[in-house]
Image 1 (tube, one colour):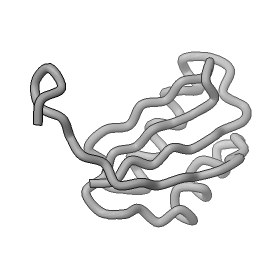
Image 2 (tube, rainbow, N blue to C red; image 1 turned 180 degrees about the vertical axis):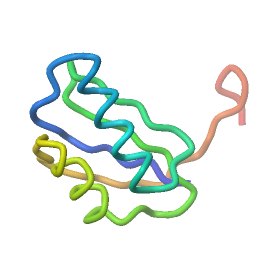
Image 3 (cartoon, rainbow, N blue to C red; image 1 turned 45 degrees about the vertical axis):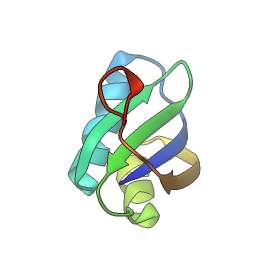
Length: 83
């Protein structure tokens, strides 16, 4: 699994978070997408390493600006942080 963190400029409210999350879900097969306008980031959990270009295009077509994308291996933790 992979965790991708996307720094985004232009999210101002909860509806912006929903728009960005929906755009990412439509672009890649994600098991989890979480956006925060306060932090200016969207975190995406996927089984396969996502195509950053596809994610960038999906977000920017809605008028937001992608400042950076980082992807790292992700290990799902069990109940109460146990493996």
